[in-house]
Length: 414
Image (cartoon, rainbow, N blue to C red; front, side, top):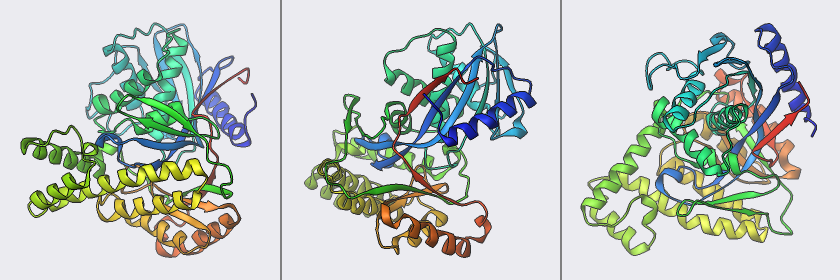
């Protein structure tokens, strides 16, 4: 299996970093984990909705090999100021401590901590060098990293886990319990299960996965990621944590009022929805706005799924856009740079739909674009975005993405 041009460039960066930092990865493996592009429902995972998305070709690459010690030695070419992250298996800082707050090392520390807590005994350390080109917000960089490190440590230690959902749970626990980030399972799931050329439909009720090809006759289109150049802090420091807490608060209020629900996704029928708005809308307007988005997004979700199966990408795009307006106006999770990107591309013919991506505040927006209009989108962004956001004039980027496998392993390249 050969590396792509981007993969070869990443390998060059990794090999130089390995040499410069005296980390031996000769004869080891490279594991590549993808980013993800959520088609629906953004912010639905912790609210209990079904999910639909694809793996995309912005990656984290990890070159690694087992060593003869119990030490884990890792270097990230994206965070050179952190130097080499080195620690002995089982000896890491305390969860959510000041010692981990400002370093990317909190992820490998957290993986060691969670694996030990869950009964996975690591006996061999690894040497590893990482490099990634996933934008810093909106495409699941942290989930990709956690999936990659867990799978690589398991491989180095001969630990076999057949159930991919266990990897998802471990990766989520690293962020929830060690780092303090209140993420759901959307990102880890979409990456670990992603399959080239397919969309992934995940049902949280039974944790089932269904791969869905786009229907015959669909217009030729591209997934375009609009990196604003902003860098969102961890979810634990963002509006994401506030929104999740608000949704959980509304669930608690409704449960006390006699509604038999466990999450906002359980509110599916129009009668119950209207009754809740009537009873609680005046007292809790912001909380009911969060419900308004989730309720509407769920109804749109099934229409999007059927449109995808039918090859009706125009309808998929319209629903994608409608979700974006709901995220902006009702869920209030977007940000000024994200919406500037959406406003710019919305004016371009051939853009089928656009909205913010991921946790919110900062990071990237995304668009579905007819293939023949992609260059027009790039030109519009290149002209208008620096004028609107001059502070990010040298940092923004437009990525035209392919649908790819979530995880690949390369041998014989080191």
